[in-house]
Amino acid sequence: MRRIGTVLRLGILASRSQQSCVWHPQADLPEDPQFQERYAAYRKAAQDKTETLKPGDQIKLKVAKGTPPLTLLCLASNNTTLKTMRKIAKINPVCKGAEIKPADTTDNARSIVLWLRYGTFDFFNPGDVTWNVEGELVCPYAPLGVIDLYQVSHHGLNTSNNPVILKTLSPTVARRCGVP
Image (cartoon, rainbow, N blue to C red; front, side):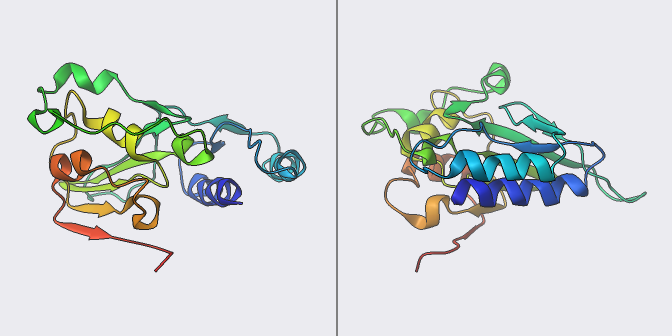
């Protein structure tokens, strides 16, 4: 159900964008036996104007005249991270000795990670992405730097919130949603 929620939220976002499609993660959720039926209903509602969101994709959002630039960039999806920003990044010293956990085969590792910049304000939303994917976002290079607002990964669970990403991004404010 989490995947459907993400799809629906992205659909609402798309209605506010300058583009005419709905973004969604890869359409497969083997642990949900009803997923294909639900996904078919989603595709019908979206009138098949969909696009799979991939690392590096930028969602163009409408901005009012005279307001700061607004950028929404996909940094990770489907267990894959954006690699192109690393060309401009420095080696991240925080990565030395970083812990790597066993591979996560759940849907969480395929979560969409978004970075929103509004003028000089940076917001990082890792969704439910897990430990190792978070590490890949900032190791061995740290392309993002310090951010203003960090949406705590995966409701603050210990399968996410890798100390490497927290130390690298050094958020001014961290916000947690959901599970107490």
